[in-house]
Length: 152
Image (cartoon, rainbow, N blue to C red; front, side):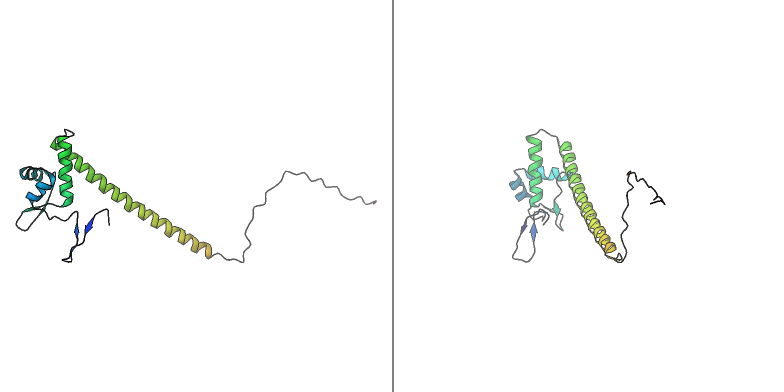
């Protein structure tokens, strides 16, 4: 399930950690930040919550975890918001590249299997009535030929 946690919902739809369900006041409480801070982070592009039809912000569990990470980097590590934004962008880029590597690895593995199957088909099509050629190695042994004498 791609590392995502899924929650069963009796209403028939599935909630994931990426589902935007929390209004800004709840997200602020869960992250330990002030709602105005969340709005500023949204304006700066640090955390981009989902939007309702009326343009209201809706935060996912993943967004709240990101808010906590931003707070930790800012307060505990002393990194400014521009630096945090760059870190987040690089983490997204790394995740995308890792996904691409996994995709390409799967394609290479599939191609290798297909090649092995094709090679097996070619070997199976060989005619079995042919005698395989074996390389005869020349030896350095010395053979002396002596003709028979006619007097014997």
